[in-house]
Image (cartoon, rainbow, N blue to C red; front, side):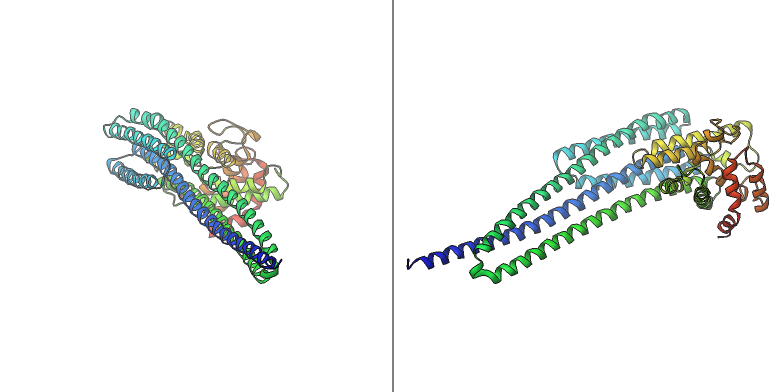
Length: 445
């Protein structure tokens, strides 16, 4: 019996040491968890950013090829060719950077597939440019609109698969994190049990250990919150980048017929004002939700994206268009709807694509059915296009263009009023006319 207290002491001491060792392991695992998750999350965000930027720049490259095909003179062609070479250089740099980052046999294989399709795309782009420079515009156009479109689709599919693999890396990191969390919880339980057994001689240590564990848990939660906020900020940054690409493309197209981009800003403001005022008046309340109006305002700048297919000699012609030229001009509406669906189908929300394609394809339709090119009438015309038509026509009337002078505000409002029921939705026209003071404020800015 004399040795019993000593034995109890050694048992309690051993139990306390086990508890202390468990605490050390717990802290180490938590630190490893935060470090590994941070590293994987940052890497995934960077990989996704590169893949999204590569996809967007490929479409910019295709748009530049189209510009080369419709260039009016050698000087303009050389300018577009220079832009095309600059895009190639940027794409090469981005592929090199992405290649350095990609790890793992399966992801490296996917990367090489993407790069192979990209080089094939460039080879066919070279063929199209050679045909263009030799004057074979029709054949070059075929390459751009068919062969290159197929390669772009292949590259898009490859990038989508690569992004899927990147997401799987993130999922694996998350699963690893879950495993570590479970492991640390078990370790915590073991530690607590051991510390309770040793409470008689280690009460002070137990209190400190518990408070230390709580602090570590808070630190971990804080670190995870920081990572979450960083991820959300990155997503918002990518969305802003997409919006800027869309707005930049719209401004580039507007600049071709002499507009500085103010037309896009004003028409977007008119569209937002008209949609909200119509809803306040009890019109189309089932359609004009906050989300719908937000997407409509975002889609408004794309209403004339189809003009990219119209030659400069028509867009910039100072006089009246011939019948043949006008027929060619009218094609910009359906072409705009097609471009929106094909170019943005993999980088934008389906609801946005639907609204943007409606605005581009149908904003020249008229209420009485005499518009172009689908010949829709009345409520067959999508609400988005009817709203866009009022904003677009009014701003065109009061703006100076290469083929006309600016019209007085009074005369423009008079034409809008007289066109109710023929060109425009009569209910929307009434709301638009009631907004006269607000519209004049926009024009005075």
